[in-house]
Length: 224
Image (tube, rainbow, N blue to C red):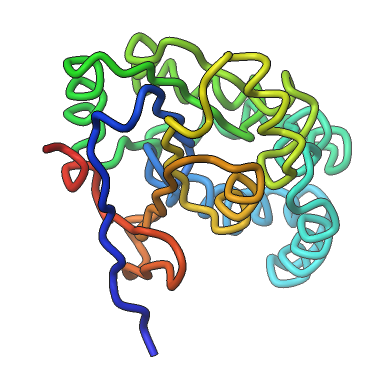
């Protein structure tokens, strides 16, 4: 049974700080899904004289072994592990990097109502550089923080404790939007005041609302 939408129910007067994930939340996750599930297996297969099916099976096991850790998003780690120049490969398909509809409108709105807006991502600094160069979203944020800077992945509650010290925000008056339920659970355990689940991280997959967290498809749902 498909969960019904739990609509966000808050007033912006209750919130000072907005924390936003990048991949799947602000940017279409189709790029990442295609890159890791299709493009990298194709290149890995060619390099190692494997079938793409064999390559995909090998890589999926390797991906799963480090899921929800800093290694999962570390491009240097994967370059070393796979014998491929992962940043260079990302640049070859960077035409697939796209901003979700209404994201820029929301970022402009958030600044117009005097909120502190921070990009908080598990993405590696090299991935971040590629995507910010392609999307030009950087100037919309007060601060941009990569998980490698904090030393924990966002799935780990320790991440949020260190981030609070880093950015000096009041967690009870902060909102986090993310497309990963594990991250929202971690932030909830930490005591984040407001949580929003992005229900369509990729333009190529159907909407799937969270059964636990308030959900949106696009950020225009938060413009009031």
